[in-house]
Length: 259
Image (cartoon, rainbow, N blue to C red):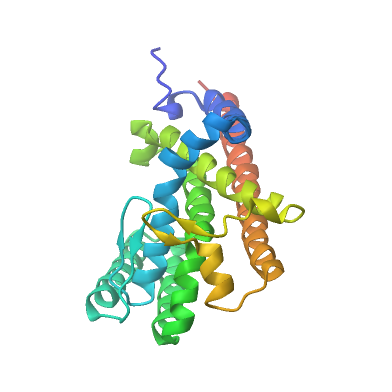
């Protein structure tokens, strides 16, 4: 029988082995690249920058700002507008509807949680919203990276699995999380790694804005990013444990099933 890595349902035993090995290997490679000067530059430039800017934009959209993500910089208007609020609300409603039609409770709950987050974000003061948007750069990169890694464990009916796209998402997700998390983990003991100052063509860095504009202390800055580091690590660990367990259970069931 012809075996295809992109259709692991044809070989459940292969799928659980891939799940068990692929994620640790992806993170090990991400750490290795992060510790190599040239690799770190490549990682930051081609794999982390987009999730970082998208993190700014996502918080902006959920807060009612027509954010425009770009390369190394996301444009955030000073005032809210109706369009992003309506579009995000429509997306949440669509997610809840699809979850209801497909009997996927998790999707319905996710849509409700996002709607609640939108309500809080759009009713917050402009100062609070801009603080969250600024924090959402590195925090968003880690959250998005975590979500991309979790996509590796999608079910066999998913297009991500059938088309092999989950492999690319795993690499990008692991790199985005490791590259960002490494900075703030090291900052616990070495404040010099915090990217304070000006970025050419962009302006003041996010840490500088959080400290200078919003009154955070350096300790608060580090502690709050480290909390995100830890929470994302827990999510990845939980998804990995469940994903491997579920795939191995399916493999055992297939092996024990009568031929």
